[in-house]
Image (cartoon, rainbow, N blue to C red; front, side):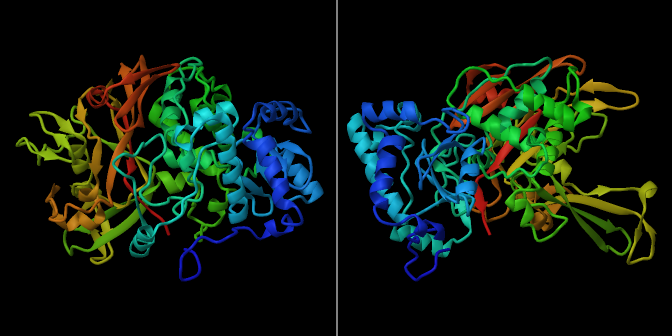
Length: 556
């Protein structure tokens, strides 16, 4: 973590600030904070409103920054402040909304102890002028009054330092977490992921989406993605560096704009016409105004985002050229292990393939469904209370990970026997993603049959994936999982934060979604209409796509 035996944070995280720290630099910085950032008095707020416009395009918005070396205001979004920094070699600028210092050499917001102290002092003065106390100022109030965001930097206590020494990799999302609205981490997650921003927790982000003509399939997926905590933090922290020749054709750039729209505080429904156009451009099989499949759109969107993220820092840093470490892979990619066992010599051939989602068969389909097992006696498994005849998500996962006899028509050439032999195949989870998406296969397409399967599947608010891990395989006998004695292992536990539903038939239907905003606070998103929903509404819904977020996060 930090160098030194006392584990204290460094005084400066950027070597380029020394060029700014010349005579009277503190007074100059205070004036900027007083007049153009916190603006505590009515006079300074008027001055800020009149003078703080981009010197290149005249806009007030677009994340205005001020050069720390000269009198220049420029848009961050349109890169006008970047052009000024490059031309004048003025490497530092200040965000006029939040007060953060940006270094164009480091290409990131930086920490400097002295500058941070000045920012804190001037912010407190502004609060006093506004007759606010720090505990009264929410992010939304600050933004609307021009005071800036109320956010205190984290400084470790002795107890926290001790915990960090003994638990260097594990970060727990607490029981009060607001999955989908800023996951509160028990330990400082800026050590976990560099773009995590705890100040985003209280930003209003519920916003409807206009249906542009049978685009409900897109709207419900957009709601799920914009409420994925780590994806939100990435896009709102300017981590994407576009390297496409035409940024207007980059889906990642458009998603960045979409996140800013969602978290801007505006309540009017957003019109995602540019997103739709880009989806049509990059996934032509989804083009047109006929109804599409939400699951197909999710996979297509993740694929395009994954391809367009290749220029980002994390995408470049992957040691394996065949493995991408972009934000999409970090959040959504897991590893599926396939073990094929020869029935003669019992030799095992193992392959591990990446996955973004798990598609699960349902009872009622033409594929024979494995009989219900543990829990049929009325017990509770994975938080799912079994009602006689009710299928649970755990049942579907048991069926997915059971050993399957491939039969005489699908013999494989065994490397041990050197001949074709019958075998069994078993799928298990080698690596779990941060966000696990389960696709319940409700649409059946075959040569003889096209229909929707409406079988009710019970799914839990919390899900333990330990029984389905490759490491738990020895505990599974013919698909029957035996609960381990150590039930305190929380590494593989997930919390539900989004559900996509389909109402109607295969030929004519409509997609909606449930989104978890705060703890136990759910909302139904039906295109432009957002309504409050109960937990019962969520759990009683049919379920088509289920999004779960890992409760424990790890970092290298």
